[in-house]
Length: 257
Image 1 (cartoon, rainbow, N blue to C red):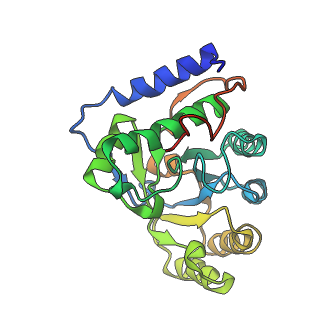
Image 2: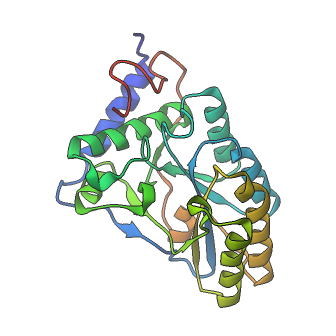
């Protein structure tokens, strides 16, 4: 198998990032924004079919979003389409963060399994986009002290949410829109919402409704998670690498296994 010098470098950096922090340190947990008046719209489980449509809708509204992506869930992060989607979102000023490799129940994992979940995703984002994320979202919002400990080894802060649109648990369009109507009526000082980019109705119906409803309620600061926390989105930014045999979601041993 051909391994480029960039891949060796990226793997070294990913391992190095895991050694920076002491093992006893736990990743910080964020469930709401810190910057007054900020709205952070987040989208999990991509990169997937409706990613570009979501990005374009956000761009047209003068808004920024955050995409918590998997390595191998709905699609493989190394697929050409996935890379195009990620790079398009980044080029438009949106944030890309980790949602782990294959969307498992992290509290059931061993330390070695957790390290695999973080390292494979970090390495893939470094290779394909030249970014080492500073944040991750645990699948299902589930975490333990061990999850936080291993995440800290990789320099990752843990981001959940204060509002769930309900799209991934069977909410209808009307119910998800009702969540945003309630937010607009309650008018909290900050908003951090969970959505999923894997639902066409979220991209084409709920998101436009949400932006309109929140703007009418007076919100103007639609930002990334990093911006709403007043923090940096990435531990490192460099140039993407060149495709080689390691850009795969299958093989021996299989990534994520």
